[in-house]
Length: 374
Image (tube, rainbow, N blue to C red; front, side):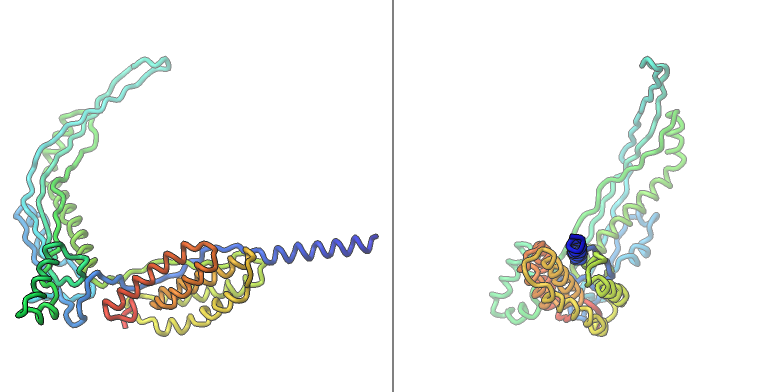
């Protein structure tokens, strides 16, 4: 009996150890990814020039000179020129006018333990309001028909049906299309609270010019952010740096744990080289052993066991993400399809499949093989 009990104990311990060894917990491990955000419109590389025109009223120019506005407008990947730019940006600031001031009174009460009001104190603040006017225009070629207005589409169709302009319209689809917008029409400033209304009024009187200048500065800076965002969304090739993640085994007793830790350390170290302004051919070659490992992992844990399914999910997911950021949308689509068929957390595969399809279209549109400078 003692021998049987000892054998049972050993068997149970071994079984328990094996189960623990196969436990599959996944955790997010982050890595760096840099690439170019591709614009909605394609501009041939030898034509990427932009020009800026600034028109400011005296009230704005006195606080924010035109030269400073001019220098802060930029189009990523384009050269600034003075004549015949491919993309023209015009920004206009109208007059700034004082509109009105409002006084606000806040009463603070103090009460005793019985709830009876023992004292009242009034606090005063003043809000001054100024009106602004301004707008911008971005002039450039628009080839994406979905982005055109009804009038612009009609104009393009008319050009194409004109026998004398057919050649010109095909070579130069829709020229001089304008993207435009308006800036906010009012800004305000509110003082701190004062116990005396006269103090609040005195502050406004003594700091009126500073308040006005600060509001104009804020108005122009906010406008420049909007113009730059819009211009770059349509035409700019904007470098960006982000952090992405892979699903890596976090169960120390699992036999794959040590090699997965090495894999993610390798990805973290190598991905530091993934920047928008550098080619990634060498990076892809350096990452290939990691990709090969995850490829093998897909077949190493077969069957319908939930733990094996999670292991396959991590392999498909990691291959999908790495291929996507290495600008291999076709391979990313293959891995996304495998992830979906695996059946564990299929939404990730569906999301990346959509992103990969869009990446393929954008690379084709911009005649590029990579979102990284070649």
